[in-house]
Image 1 (tube, rainbow, N blue to C red):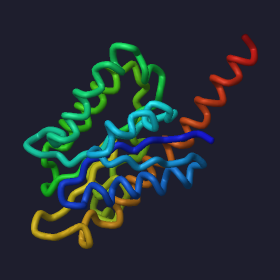
Image 2 (cartoon, one colour; image 1 turned 180 degrees about the vertical axis):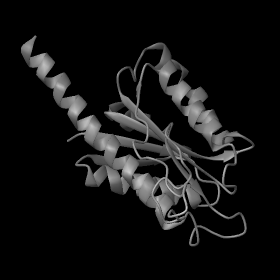
Image 3 (cartoon, rainbow, N blue to C red; image 1 turned 60 degrees about the vertical axis):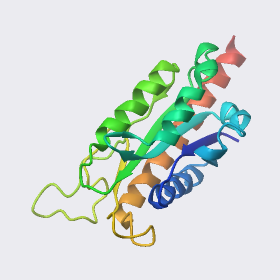
Image 4 (cartoon, rainbow, N blue to C red; image 1 turned 45 degrees about the horizontal axis):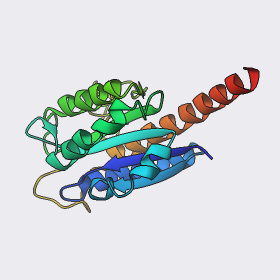
Length: 196
């Protein structure tokens, strides 16, 4: 079965809810989701390496991925050198307290990181929601991202109150998309091996 690792950091629980939504989408897309909190990532690196795709998630702190996620990214230098993740699919998600919060910067950081690993980036295929007079915060992709899934959670409320349902459904959509494309990509690679 196709496997998708979701490596994430969550400072206060909000981004964990987003990661769980991505995992639900992966399962709905017909792949096995492997949730890996970044604190466990080094110990579970064999699981991550064995996955067909890797989705990276972290809160955006000070315009960047959180420090624990960045530490993990730096840890992968040996994998990078050996091209261990070459041609795996990759995607990303992030959360912050502000509507913008410079979340795009974090998704760009993940996309560049994936490119350095020779991975293939999967963006969000949803048109922006909540951008006209008939829209609402209940629209999927209400924050208007194309590079990955964004969410917003109020800084004075816990994960039981945020991210809101539309942000979680957007993350689930991303997970389903990654799973579907990963299965297609794996099948195409298998056909190439058979035809060779």
